[in-house]
Image (cartoon, rainbow, N blue to C red; front, top):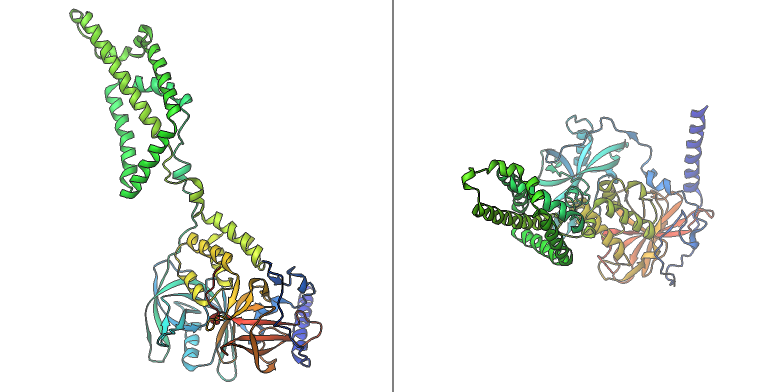
Length: 542
């Protein structure tokens, strides 16, 4: 019974898609040149968004399914994660206009014979099953030569479809970053590369050895007297005292020995600062030491504390006299002074070994950064919700990087960053700086941050492939300025079911920036929106 309900639900969704595609095209005039006084930070979406899209009716889940590729079958033999540093040879797809991240979806339309041979090879290969390499390639504006990125991502083929003309439709997912060591073309014309898997670091926390394991400097009032008494007793045992002093000094020396010259200076400055900031406490401790010494000079106290020492240093009766008494008192005074110095020294070195305050360390704490990045994404973008990834900063850093609406060069920069904390910090900077969207060639302002629209469950930016095999990463906007339309509206191979697409160009430099999507069904909301290619966006920071 449950299976029949699922089949009926799927059949209903397919009929709905076909109905949207077959309806008569009804294109309304698009008011895309009007200005808005609303400069809010929220991005419009079908899950709350702005008031303009309170009647959002499009099923954003359809866009993430890439239904335009047709029915696909699942690939078998999933590949396990490779160890960092592993070297292997893979067929490599060099893609212009797209940067693939781990866990991101990549649609492919494979029509060239050499690339078809590459896909067929990995589908039957058992060493690296269903795995290809994806590397971003760009055109140098100075000499118009291709530039190949040094860092790419392995992609695992999850679904595919063989067409009658021999071409392939493929859905792949990014898996692991790699460094491209060398590249060549084999005898079948397949582009290949030797890649080395990048060892990803673990999420960083505030170092426990700076704030947890090492005891903080105790208050002088609580510590000074007990330290003086214990030190005085231990100082009376010469060999034991030397061993303990040596171990303490060795511990301190081993700590400082691991520091660079610059870090050693910073550490010493921190200790000096700690000592100068507690002059009053130390002066109070000196008074307590004097009070302790007055008690220790009592014959009973001294006798009780030094009974063992007197046994070890016992002399013949003939040597006992005034001279021996004065010598003993002089020795005791020296011992007390030395113990007092050791007490102050130990007290000073009980300060925390951290070079910087806690808030400095939290700036690189992966979990603190993950919370901040997720909260900022929710405030600025909204969809999809990143709160579920806060406990996995490594996954979150790639997830945001694959969906953040910035240019492809900036996204390649994010891919090449080694270190979770550094990648999250850069993403936070970019989220803060997203303000205006400009044409890459002429710097014409196309839209503002508040004009972004989420039309897919994957976020405001996603990858789509056209019938000719070109993959485009597009940012969706509900309003744009300075754009002109070229050609007729088409419904075939639409990335968004129920919408027709029209080529849009920059009205100033006539560069193709993307497409205008218009609803073919009166009940479909929004009525229209824009898809702008990330490869044609300028790097703009506020």
